[in-house]
Image 1 (cartoon, rainbow, N blue to C red):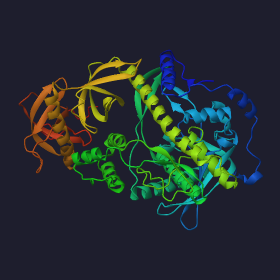
Image 2 (image 1 turned 90 degrees about the vertical axis):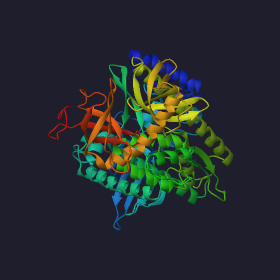
Image 3 (image 1 turned 90 degrees about the horizontal axis):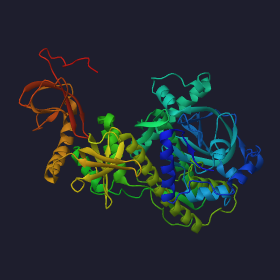
Image 4 (image 1 turned 135 degrees about the horizontal axis):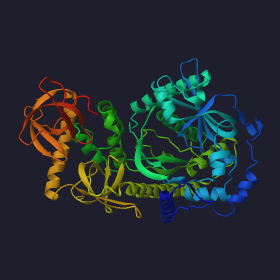
Length: 601
């Protein structure tokens, strides 16, 4: 048994490359002997009888799931109930993989080795066989399924109070997707088709949205980081990869994220109260706090010298409010500077906590809501079920420590494999664009080299010339010099003549970040300007009388500047600024005060 692959002529080579990457990173692309025989014995498996060993019957509740439209490995469903005191009862149903996959069986052994499903763009290597992850252990629509339920209440102020964790049988009443639910909740889309005829499910989603909003507000007030994740995905057409797009956040994605976090926090608290050792997820301290401080300084803000989650959260919240359009670019840089998380063991006998999750501003956090896709979640599920049944712990502390270390390492390897495949796909897309220039930000710097991320399309590559001068968070213009789809290499060079010129441009770019931020309140205002540059890349101007306190304002004329030459004087109107990249954009203004080329697309 092996991975599922999108069928196409072009993707065949990429799928073969994905398999190579799995092997190169110590991940097994194939299920071992014995898995097929084990599956044959499971296909007739059904959830335990209601009432047996305390299994609760929750099939009457209006459960629903929200995921990508194509997703079939459904780990999580949700149900909410309004309580008389103003709080909201939240039940998060999690696929009970352990009900069909016992420890040390062939399927479990494979899951324990890879520890995660690996998503390679054109290929998926699932942690569990698809007969399980997309069917028997998936919370699929309309089917009774074994589940593990985490119950909690969300206070009027968004505080989370864990209640219980227990086994149940449930039925998913509506399989929903992020885009249609997000548009509907935001008020600019119709009622999603699966709940169009159900007033109960519509009310469910609205109350879920209310609960998620409370949770989000409380987390940010407590110092959780207000970050937008950037998820590049291959765009397919006629069996070929034609582009790379970024998945946008919306209300539905926020809802699922908030419920996932609340359930994981509650599970950690419940296990702690039950006195059991557990695998925790932590981000101890930012890897490059100095880089975060410098980035904030370039944007006119100040952060303390020592890591401070609340201060960083306040900075990010203010940046999101000030410039929501470009917030994902800032988020990516912050994520890179924070560094990765890790799995650690918190023993029941430990006198102190194993550490907190810096990005979430919580002391107790586990991964528990995706046992079809992550082995750590399956382990936590087994720990919870054992404590519920008052049975011996399924893992000794030493075994948990080994699992935690292995999960951390395999996550690092799978991330590296996925990253390389994204580069291979991107190299395929960019193969015919050698010599073009792109706006980019520096995302990493190590002994291996300096790496940058191009904004459009959202791809990463190595800065093979000019990397010694830049640092993480810097923005610059780069030129694509070469691609190698076979190895996933994408090479850029700083678009400058020499190191001295690059240093000058970087200093200028850092200054322009602050200028772009200061200019935000002047959007729509007209100024007199002098043309300082004109060529194939565009027309550039400098304001002759910039706003008070800003000595130099330079920017690009986006419309109406085709006839302008260096030295010309023109009236321009500020139309946009980008404090992340330091961009300042103008349109020319005609004699009657109208935009030049008004109505142009």
